[in-house]
Image (tube, rainbow, N blue to C red; front, side, top):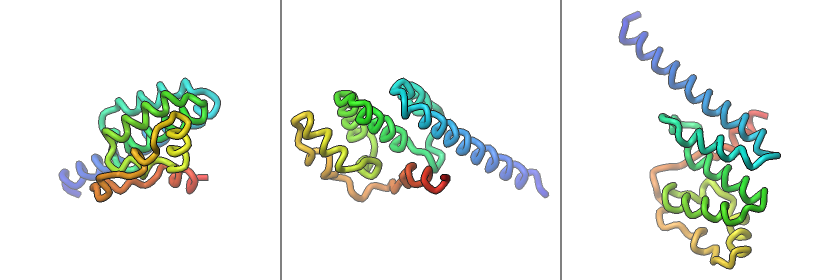
Length: 139
C-alpha cells in the first residue's frame, strides 16, 4: 500500500471519527435538554467548534434543536430570536423547522407567520437531512 493511499485512509478515518464525535455529543446533550434549557449553552458550544459541517450534523440541525427547546420551555422571545437568526443565516432554514410550531410561535407574538413560512431561496444548494430522522433510525 502506498503512503498516499495510507494517508488518504487516515484522513477518511479522522473525518469519520469527528463526525461520530459531534453526533454523539449532540445526542448526549439532546438527552439532557429534555429537562433543562441550560443545555442550550452546550449546543452553542458545538456551534463554535471548527469543522462542524462535516456532513451529518449541520448548524441548521443544532439551531433548530435550540429553537425547539426554547419553544418547549415556553421561552418564546428566545425562540423568536433564534428563528430570526436562522432566517438570516441558514439557507432554506424552514427545512429544519416544523411549520406548525413556527406559525403558533408567530401568532403568540402577534407576528405574521408568512414572514417565515415563505422562503425566497427555495433552490439553495443545501438539502439537509433532518437530524430527527437520523435519531429515529438509531432507536
